[in-house]
Image (cartoon, rainbow, N blue to C red):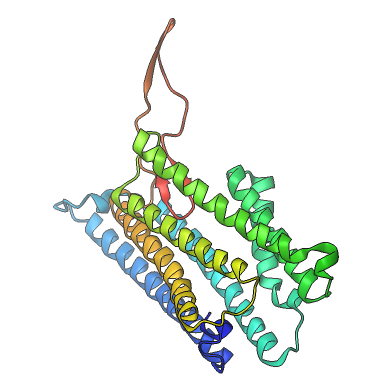
Amino acid sequence: MARWTGLLAQLSYWFVLLPCWSSHVGLFICHVYSIKMLFSFINEANNQRQTATSTDHIDRVEYLPLLQRALRFGLKTGSISILLFIFEILLYLKLANQSLSLTVVLTPLWMIVGFGIVDGIICKTQHFTRVFSWVLILLLMLTIVLKVDYGYDDDLLRLQIIILGLLVAILALGIGTLIYILCGHHIGYFRLTNSQLNAGRLYVISLIIASVLLGMIISMHMARPNIFQVRVIMAALAPLSVALVGLGAYAITLDEFEQLLQFGGQSSIQPMRLRLEKSGWTAVEGKGATNIPMFGEVR
């Protein structure tokens, strides 16, 4: 953002992307460390399990659900990290040398978005809102490719308005969903933990900041600002928005880690409500809990 606004116009692209590349290295180290600690934990628990005097409930827990959950999470985060790392390298090659088309640069993202849409439609493991978000992102990528690679005239197809409209729709959908979850907590439809509630607030603030930033760009007709103070504000708002999302996700991670220690990777048992009917008492149909992206398991 500092380079785009002209605040640091001579900043090298490799320096801009260096924190991203460093984060992938850090994530790889975390994966290796997690695998070592997981095996160490299971070996120690197996030894403790043979001890009749052990009073730790973890020693009596079946570890297969924990292994399955850890493996599934590790493969998902590892795959996404590798694809994003390839995308960042391709993006650097395009920005530095202009040797690649945007279609080729977005290849890893095509794979991620395509898998999300297929998984939501065929496997039916996602809510309609989430699948609709994937579709909006796909349309956004297609319109940007048409504008950059094929040079369609904006006056004819008005791709610039379509791109901005899709961005506004994605942000509005995200803010609306978060407000729905937070309001559902206050009326009792959801029962968020303190970490989930704080994370939800941070997500909302982050998207509001992103909306303000997008509004500033639209008000300037996609042109770089000329006022120094505006450049500083825009350069500060962009990383602040990302940092708030990361902080909220970190709070959710701590909450999920506590649940892993408590239940050993197994799904927590949620009591089902009873309802009095003419034929007698019956349990209300429902899982009692659901998995929401960026929130984890929500009661």
